[in-house]
Length: 357
Ligand SMILES: Cc1cc2nc3c(=O)[nH]c(=O)nc-3n(C[C@H](O)[C@H](O)[C@H](O)COP(=O)(O)OP(=O)(O)OC[C@H]3O[C@@H](n4cnc5c(N)ncnc54)[C@H](O)[C@@H]3O)c2cc1C
Image (cartoon, rainbow, N blue to C red):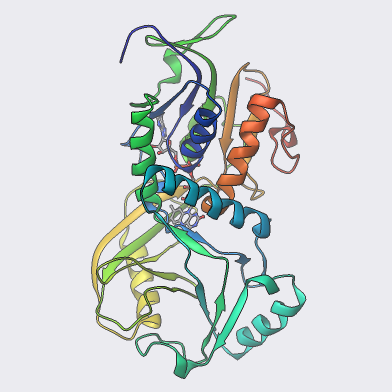
């Protein structure tokens, strides 16, 4: 690194949160350095990347989906265009009916629960690919898609490097020095520190008071010679996401008892069973990976300024929906940092009491 460099912002972590916030800050002509420890295995590089506008068994609209999803599509496409790359796929989801009750619920809820704009064609079983086990058919959902999040992260890293805004390493908070004017870290001085370290933030003294609820997830990659439509995502409990060359991603599991990044045989078994119940074709598993979702107890992000540490901020808690929520939230974080806009009380840090050190 060059000596005596000054930045407006240091961002710790280059997952979805850090990458998108850096994008907005650099576009606003701020001097930014993102410090990323690639040995940490964040959530972004293993995320299935799905943007699903409907949540859970109750079949309700996902939180602000009608706002978050169009914003996300627009931003990912803008970045793709500028970086001359491709990581976002505007693909519909085929929601596979579990049973007759589930089919009825979808039919009723598509009229009554404000999700009508996402509802597409109701497919009968005989209209679907033969290698898909969907005896009751399925429902097309529109305004959906998936982000190849690992590709996104790699492309954003290169863009940051090209903008002299990236450094690899584990930011050591103990080596941060602070005086009245700025922070000093090694031979860098900077004004503001933003913590975007995902799950790892909860291990730090500054943010351990926040009620994180980390959720480990695992997914598998498989190859199969199937007649599955390549321009659809297939979802019931798990999802099959076609990628290139007969390769598919399948996941993801949830576990709240394990915060290691190790892949497990339990998850593999669960995923194999799930895949066998959906796919009527031979397959070969070519990979398995794990990561920790930075989920929170109240299922809302953490955004704002530390209650007592001046110029120290957090943008975190994106949970299992970061792909659709992060673009809008990163813009709101920018408006808070640069233009003093208030953070929405639903996800502002002000909803928690800081217990002190
Ligand atoms: C298996 C799985 C499947 C998922 N599927 C989906 C999905 O389909 N749709 C969806 O929307 N979301 C999904 N998610 C969730 C999504 O991945 C997260 O919401 C999002 O990636 C969180 O981004 P983040 O930047 O907050 O955290 P992270 O991606 O974890 O980024 C934190 C970064 O901080 C870095 N870091 C940590 N400590 C330090 C340090 N001391 N110094 C420097 N760098 C550090 C890490 O290396 C990491 O890159 C999934 C997650 C998993 C694990």
